[in-house]
Image 1: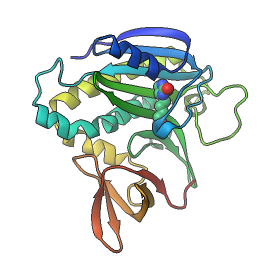
Image 2 (image 1 turned 180 degrees about the vertical axis):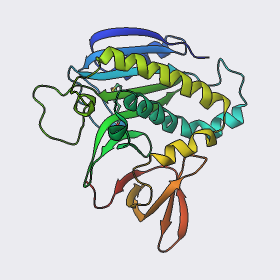
Image 3 (image 1 turned 135 degrees about the horizontal axis):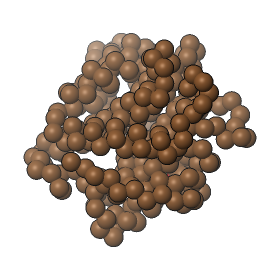
Image 4 (image 1 turned 45 degrees about the vertical axis):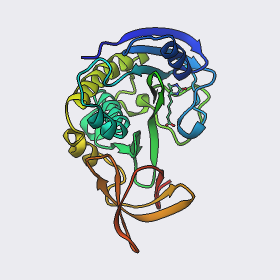
Length: 257
Ligand code: BTN
């Protein structure tokens, strides 16, 4: 059972960098850093993660299989699904603050973005990164909670914009709820095959049944996104090669910005 030990900061360079420094010093699994702002927040593929006041910026140190009795071969095989399970934890956290008719539009975009779907677009509510080092894993989660005063209409959506009354839970409340969901999901993920989460992921997958384009390596693959499988792979129906599994790549839904 993972226990989180949380330290809160005003400003840091990046909560991920902070966790990686603690990891190198031997900090235990469950060490969590939360900051009000980041000067060097980053996302997957080196994207900048803008981190003004009003967002939740959280990183957690994980060492799956170090404190738990778990078969190492099984662990290696299911490791790629951990970030997808974390996406489910963030989605559960967000919908916990929302009315059902709003919650139904909160979706997952492979591998683990949490987005809100409207007719012609989806906007990002949260991003997740998972980095491995020799000492463990650094899970980084950013959630847009309250829009900054200077925000222009963009590709983001904020939890505050989705709550019925416009009254938003505090960033602290969101982080508490997130850690509860994350702890439960992580413990289940350690004990169970990813199959356990599959229907929940596929039910809320924004890409299911849509035409997608996936940039993988040097090439681009286009086809219909069917579902993800028990290994967390995207199953894509292509015109030329039938149904193929894709393990990594940047996926875009065609016709939706
Ligand atoms: C992505 O969607 O590309 C992932 C974004 C991850 C952002 C979070 S914010 C907290 C943690 N610290 C960072 O520098 N990045 C992650």
